Image 1 (tube, rainbow, N blue to C red):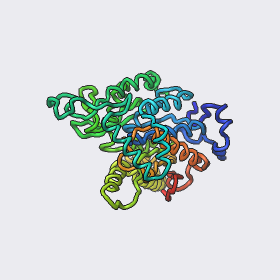
Image 2 (image 1 turned 60 degrees about the vertical axis):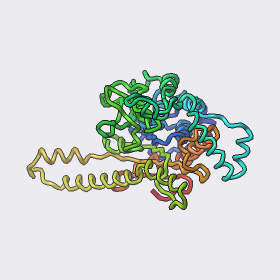
Image 3 (image 1 turned 30 degrees about the horizontal axis):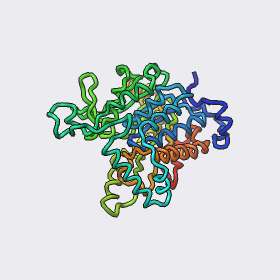
Image 4 (image 1 turned 45 degrees about the horizontal axis):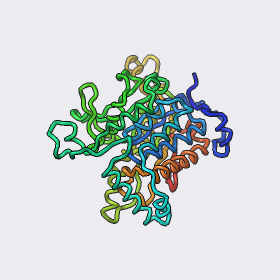
Length: 401
């Protein structure tokens, strides 16, 4: 069964041919695994929804999806719905959890970066006070007035509304069916170890609790109990699920890595910029370092494979040679990086600015960045270099990866 890249909506695809990539010589089906990897980043996650919309319109159908934090929620909305319904369910979620702005607020924000920044700060402050609808709400009384050991004593917000939202928007029967390989990452609080809840490796049935555990960022959100263990947001250890794919060399892979934090940035000039840059470095999770390491590992596998091929048949150590032979088998891998590059007016509150205004901006940015990447047919061709590995970044003002 070919699960590589298929047209999910032929009629809509014909209407949008202006940005659908030209079919490369090898065709789109050269990759057995199409992976969608979604980083954590709170309110910035609308960027991923826009990127997915462009992928679906471009005929890209991921068969492996993984996410961390808000990426886990977006991943569940995608894997837990039929292909023709996914964009609509993503839109429903992001409209449910964001507050629309008055028209005069929109007009004021359009007057310049300074005005836009003031609007963003005001909207983010409102989220801190009121929470985000259908997502999280402030605890009353606050945690400092709750008895030690109670759930209310360990977080500022209650995420119970999110559970009901997930149950409303995600078909967990479909998500657990194995139709799409699905995983979300979280951190075991007691051991400090990172864990993936994966529907393809024997993990217990995925529930809303697994999704919420991946996004339980302290001290804002409470830990989530699963099978007697308590978990926090996976971004505390690794905010990017790229390694989940790179450690698997069993299939030729095309991976779309959708990052919400840019690892590269300017030197801060004041304390506000220090806070912004600190978050970017902390949560970008060194995506480029991971791709560089993967490329180096591929090169080592190739070198060892060539050495093994030179050994005589009667070399001896057949068991060891066989073990090495299996270890050096490698598949081709392309990683397409879609990285959100924040505007100057967003500030340090950009990850909790759940305003409709910024949601729409983030969605549009993800859509345009993914369309730009899909216009490059080389991403659909297996790499012909010695490493059998390539990474691409076609974003705004991108430098070579």
